[in-house]
Length: 123
Figure 1 (cartoon, helix red, strand yellow):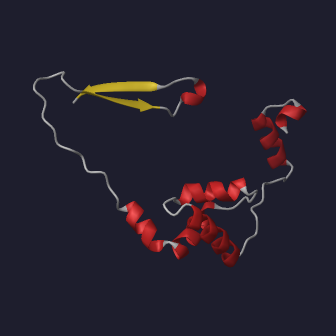
Figure 2 (cartoon, one colour):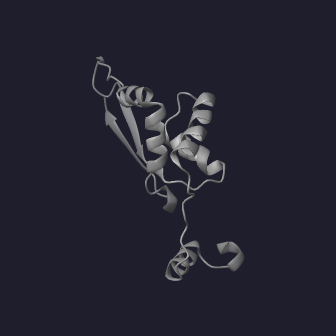
Figure 3 (tube, rainbow, N blue to C red):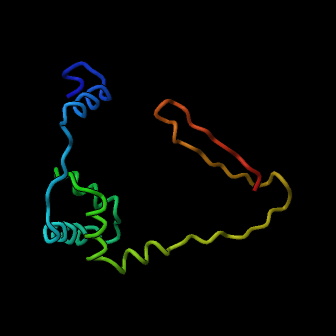
């Protein structure tokens, strides 16, 4: 819509907010949430909250993240607990001398402005 009006997206959002035009959430009850969640979990049983929210959004439903979380908690409480407590154990290793193994990490929070920070450390 902002490109059609030839204004910046933020300007359009600001004007809509000033005029009282807000994005409303779809009004679904718990049974409808659970039906969609159950159908999606049958297709992708290992997926979590963000994939479920994406499923709602792809179907054209604008829902609150908390509502999707409650639905997921009602239907797949055990799976949620198992996914939360599945931790990756750090492996111990020994190297023959310094500078033998390096670790690379990157920070992409500023990628929108073309900034990506890469850091390296001797392992």
